[in-house]
Length: 293
Image 1: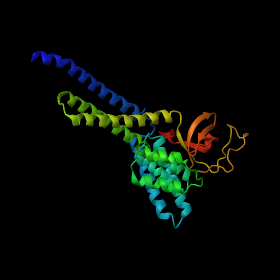
Image 2: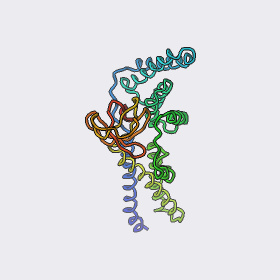
Image 3: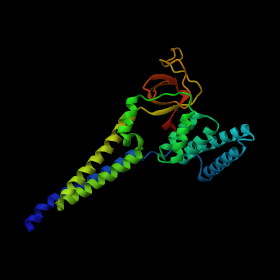
Image 4: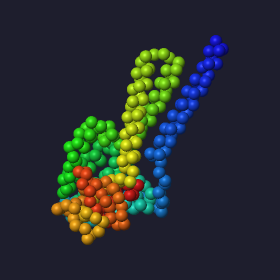
């Protein structure tokens, strides 16, 4: 009996080492995906709270005046958005509610580009918020440009729905859960010879690799390819990084058009549109989704 116990010790030690390494890997992945340097702050808590109160009050007043005095309401919506933005820039506060409120204020004054921009920023923090999703879709429906994705891309989004429909945050949580459960049941398998454990371990391993692969694809694809939105009116897309180049398309691009940044050269962005067409646009006419995060 003692000989058997001694032979099992190396196996148990290896299992403990693998479990410890797995936990360390999970902690590392959480750190990579979720930890960011703290933004610089120039406002104290009391100032942030006062700005927040003012912004909410101005938005409420604007709603009341929207019908009777639309000009005054528009100015109040702008002032509300400016105070929320000050909270982001100088208060260092970045969360879904703040960006959602900014998006709502811009949507009320028909600034579709900045509305979509801030709704997309909010979606990074609260991707499953139903009101946010509805407002974002409603704002997209108000865009002038109708740029459709190629059919093959639409098919891919249906086949690999977990990759496109679930946020990176949600996929990271699911990967971590499946990964930890994999090692837990792998440990049980050392002591209990049950056939269902083999199938369960394979199931957990498969889903772990599924979500890990999805996260890896995101990381590789979005490296130096940041999403952005056209915010200025009638942006002329060009074939080069200067106004001396001829326009890329017959019609200009309009606020709310989404793109992916391919390259930055001076004050010009080389971008890719949802239908994979590429062009150059001035930096001043667009904004990147991650620029304030």
